[in-house]
Image (cartoon, rainbow, N blue to C red; front, side, top):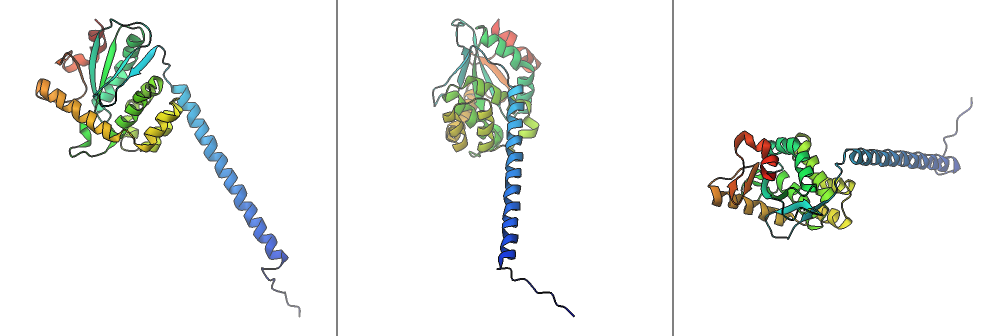
Length: 246
């Protein structure tokens, strides 16, 4: 009768097994890394293909102001201006942006319209809660503060067009990654990632809510005003671009 010798795992054969295991783990790590990298690359390429081309557009913003201004880089010195109030959690704002943004951008870039965007966050609730509206607004203000007009316009469009799928599902890292894919500056991306404009966003949202209440006795979004009065009301808001530019 013969007996089989049980091999000591510490001898050369055991060491060979351990090296093989390490090799398998290393290969798996490389494969996972490639999958992740390719996934990010594909998403970035998809985002780039969907980017809205922006030319002759500048954003002006002074930190502490309740709004930022979108205007033509060249021309349009005498263009009429309006105040647009919107909230990233407002479904009606999303509908309005989707249906009128293309016309608005065309008018702005042509020097025929200036839009003062007054972001709001009252749909996050009372008591200074930080929800989707505030985080998205903080990201928007970071881009405005750094003059990243193209990234701002595209991030804003993405958040409104995909509101149902991104609502309360994007944090500052997600917003920073998206802004980077839209060509935002490194400084703006870092400010978004750090939530640097969170307190400012809360103050801006409150200021715009109070402004509407003071002027009209009620506050809501979406809303388009000029000189403290509604430019359009009800369903006519779908025609706000034409009314504003006339």
